[in-house]
Image (cartoon, rainbow, N blue to C red; front, side, top):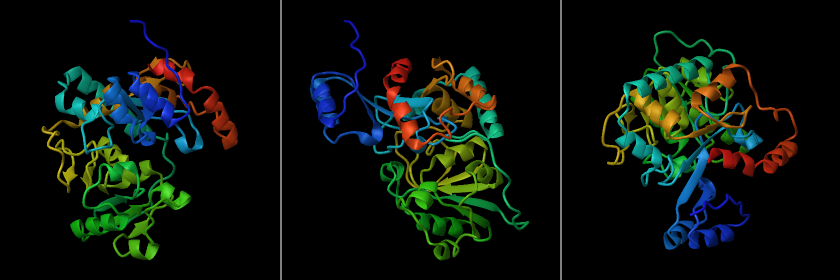
Length: 332
């Protein structure tokens, strides 16, 4: 049977009708209409959820920096611990070869060395001097209504509770609290007043780049932030109080019960291989052809930056909208 072309629709109703007609449908995971899964089950097609990959771009998606890493998951989505995802299945069932583990180890070293994270490249400055003889503990705040907390949280779902738990576990440590930028700059839920935060933390690092903070830290506490995974890349001691995708594999200090589906211990580079090599798809930002994680890191290390940076946001949004279907065909 001939393949049908990729088509874009503008409304949830059109997407649901396509699903009920037996079409495979793709939807941004956070924009999934409530009745879409039911329509897919009726039509017999596939529901493919899309999300940013974990090495995405040198700029924020909120600033319309194009994504050069995307996830297409037809089982679930990685941040939703209430059910299986493609990433969880890879972690639970893949037989990781020594060659793949070596490739993951080399990639992990490059990311840590270059301070390459999901939305940023490079580190800016160093952490301030902190008292000698006290353990370095970083507490990473989150947006409290973020999907990773709604679908991957546990008993602790608020940043102040996270700070309280970290201090209880490290009574003599020097604790730095890093609020989430969207809480501080965009007013998203999760603000902790300074007076309340400093009852448990020794400092609030609002403007500290995450790579710099992770370089300083010996231990990291989070609910379900991707920063916990990036801390693992640096082989830090990571405490998680929710159920993020990187928890439950014997690599983290888990303060919440993990899904029974995560039934085995893994070496760190198996986690890296599944998360950064096997699960996402990559696009070369220059040739706009399919690429590997290493290809994208090559571009970042060579100094490539988003050509839209510096342009007004309305111009960047318009530029991205014009190109929305072309790159999608290349991903697939």
